[in-house]
Amino acid sequence: MPGLNGDQIRDRLSRARLYLCTDARLARGDLAEFARAALAGGVDIIQLRDKTGGAPLEASQELAALEVLAQACAEHDALLSVNDRADVALAAGADVLHLGQDDLPVAVARRVLGDEPVLGRSTHSPEQALAAAAEPGVDYFCTGPCWPTPTKPGREAPGLDLVRAVSRSGTDRPWFAIGGIDLARVPEVLAAGADRAVVVRAITEAEDPRAAAAELRQALTAPRSA
Ligand SMILES: Cc1ncc(COP(=O)(O)OP(=O)(O)O)c(N)n1
Ligand SMILES: Cc1nc(C(=O)O)sc1CCOP(=O)(O)O
Ligand SMILES: [Mg+2]
Image: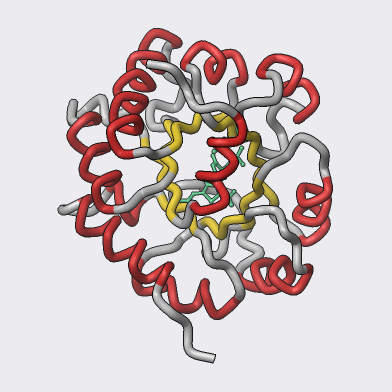
């Protein structure tokens, strides 16, 4: 199955609203079913982010999980994202590599991946966000955590002030709010100026992942009152 080219990936990124990070669901053994449900509900980008075992997944497990996600993404015209590892992103033919402040430098990741996959950056302060908005080779960035979250323990939350600051900056680079976001909080996130969000528990812990994704997407794309 031929992959998307860089223009096609960037076009989909520009239209993306809902980004899901999921673990490999090894204990439940339902990754394929879960991913198809979340994507059918309206997730635009799905990232394999498995930090559940206290150690990274074995490479073979990570690639196997990414194959499952790649198939589900292809069926739903969604983007496949890899966390942290440029070599794994290359091996999996991923559309997206996400890098945090302590991960590979963007220029190094670009050397491994070339120009086609998109690169994202995590940011936790206005300074980091503005730097990511201007950094060559970065296609999107995330700002957070909006609220303290058990999914990223120990990460201090800059809160919605950071979202407001990025919104005021008027950057034209796509950016997502992240951290502690659920359906009830989407209106506050939108009011702060974001129109894209990344979630983990709001879908991974939902009884009905398809419904959870559909509600989040609808809330993120609902017309806003002036
Ligand atoms: C889409 C997205 N946004 C933020 C993160 C967090 O990245 P990072 O700060 O490197 O932390 P880890 O996820 O690697 O623990 C992400 N993974 N994806
Ligand atoms: C993986 C991650 N990165 C963050 C950041 O601020 O960069 S917050 C976060 C966890 C988000 O999980 P949940 O939706 O369950 O709160
Ligand atoms: Mg990281």
